[in-house]
Image 1 (tube, one colour):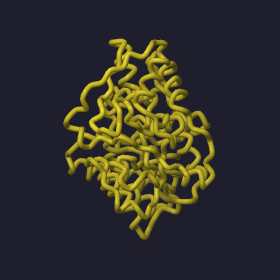
Image 2 (cartoon, one colour; image 1 turned 120 degrees about the vertical axis):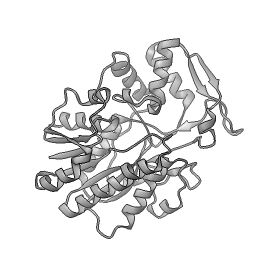
Image 3 (cartoon, one colour; image 1 turned 45 degrees about the horizontal axis):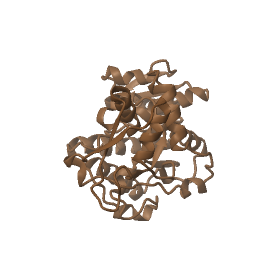
Amino acid sequence: MIIITGAAGFISSCLVQKLNDEGYYDLILVDDFSDEKQNKNFEGKRFSKLVDRSEFVPWLTANHLHVQFVFHLGARTDTTEFDYALLNELNLEYSKDVWNCCVEFGLPLIYASSAATYGLGENGYEDDESKINLLKPLNPYGESKNEFDKWALQQERKPYFWAGLKFFNVYGPNEYHKGRMASVIFHTYNQIRDTGKMKLFKSHRPDFNDGEQMRDFVFVKDVTEVLYFLMHHRKDAGIYNLGSGKARTFYDLAAATFKATGKEPDISFIPTPEDIRDKYQYFTEAKMDKLHSIGYHKPFHTLEEGVHDYVTNYLIPNKYL
């Protein structure tokens, strides 16, 4: 058995499809399955059982002898969430319970961290574990992820293999349910479809022109390839960046989306909402040397390749992966 938490969510459901494609069907999907729209993410996929997240730890305690690997990707991922108690419960304490189970039962573990832990990037974007205590996340979500990274590194007892993955700006199919938190590609496509235009945020810093704010956009199919690699690698435990390794501008992203829809770019700019303006990242770029150093060398999709695949094969036909 392979366990995937957050299985009705974006990245996890794409991982389920990747595992199915590779011939893995004895999958235990863990999540809060009360959202019917989100549950469409795993329709048509092959798995053994659905387990509600509130029942997962007792279930794992009773069934651990049958389990081979744990992907703990479930989390509260809303960067505008300011309920510290909720984030502490779901992103920190729950993750500690999963970690401790993996230690007790001898199970390998991959868990989701986030590039949100890097804050404004004052200390760079290198996945150097010695710098994690220096990081200053910009929101409670990022704080909750960084607190778990710090906690994991402090533990004397660790799973025999574990990896925390700092996901950068992941985009791709199966994010239909994410609303405001969906990728900019998703929102760009919808604006182009509905209005023929795209409005990007203005820059509120003199060192960046409008639309030239940069992010490390990484296609979800590349993310699942890395997850699959690590499931078999099972050594070199630690915390790793997971991005494309190349920052691109929001203007590039919008232009690529227009091209994928066969339309000429019509891009304008609006003020960045005040509630996020002072916590807005103007540049992120994953340093990927650490992952490459342990033997991962598959090329990542370029932004143009990933956007074209996402738009033409999923968004236009309204399909799921």
